[in-house]
Figure (spheres, rainbow, N blue to C red):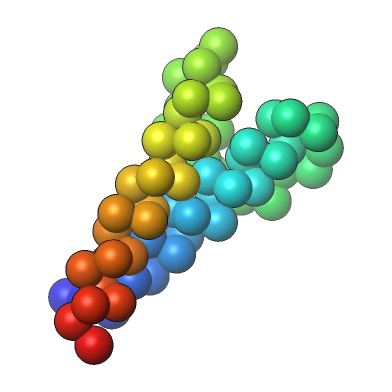
Length: 65
C-alpha cells in the first residue's frame, strides 16, 4: 500500500508541477492526462491542488518506510 501511495503521490506531484509550469510559461505539457482532472478556467488552482494532494499522499508513504 505504501508503494502505491508513493507512486500515486509522485505522479500527482509531477503532473501538478508540470501543469503549473506549462500554464504559467505557456509551453509543452508533459503529463497530458492531468488536463482531464482540472476544470476549464481553473487551471492554476487545479494544478496547485494536484500538487498539494500529491505531497499529502507521499508523506504517509515516506513515514512508513
